[in-house]
Length: 392
Ligand code: BGC
Image (tube, rainbow, N blue to C red; front, side, top):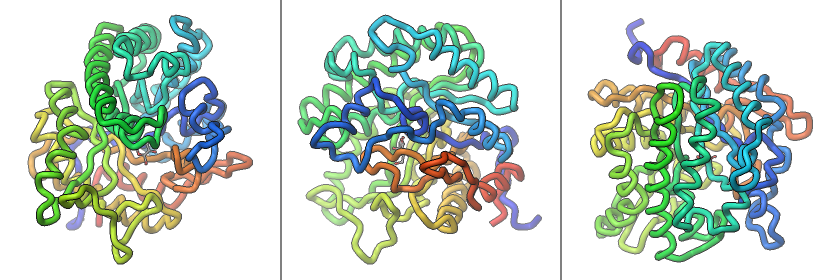
């Protein structure tokens, strides 16, 4: 077909989720406590989420039915290590079953070891501010890899440490609700260290698979006079992690939009601009920009491990994904070693502080019955994956 833009053979198409956002009943971590504080800023608690702790087979069957090659999900550390040094056989077996089932269905399981949530026992010790936490995290990774390494296809150490650091220690919006520049800097360093230690721990275990970090990236744009400010925002939010991950097996780029920066900082989109349910500008072009920046900086192979849109309008999701994937294609055409694209998210799920209102899913989830209904965007994404090409 004249108008087909093909991706290289073996390009990995997948969707992504995270334990706390879909499993339900993750009562033993810092987020559950944060959601249930009397003065909580969360729209609602995560509660039963999508009941995926029980319904994971259904979720995998949907991924397989869509013909996707990969599924990215996370291990809930607080289930595997509910108290310091105490490891749950049942939880490890649960995740092992999930990994084996994925492989049996022809789906490459991509596992994240830390996706925003920290076990309550560790949060009580100071979480990622504590100097021993990188070692505690590496120990968890070693134990989990010992039991699961032989059935992993790819591992992500920490999901968006830059968002956890910024929102948790600078903006006070994520647990532990701190807004302090100095503590933010300390946590940033700890996350880089935790990544390095986790990576060695995972690589020392069974299995042979790529290990990397996933980083939240934004297409920052400087308004006149905002150049210096933009560079300084990016330095601690992105560049420090790009340095820390140079030479890794891969870097997972996660992006959703672009942001304007003037001399005073970030500028909110105006009322005239098209925005998403998250209040971000509708800007699928961020994929091409951030992937190119990450690749040029690190020299690593890149996967887009998350990209998508919070919208009630599924036609808008299709529009967004088509443009974003077109940007991914452009990266490859321009010589970037981009190896896969994961849509966030498989399911409509718990969007952290915003609760269940933002709809990022390719699949709708009934909040009372938990029934899953694939949307038109799921079919669209499946058709791109099947053709390994964009036809529009
Ligand atoms: C996170 C996800 C989140 C998504 C959409 C990323 O920052 O990794 O957990 O749901 O963006 O906001």
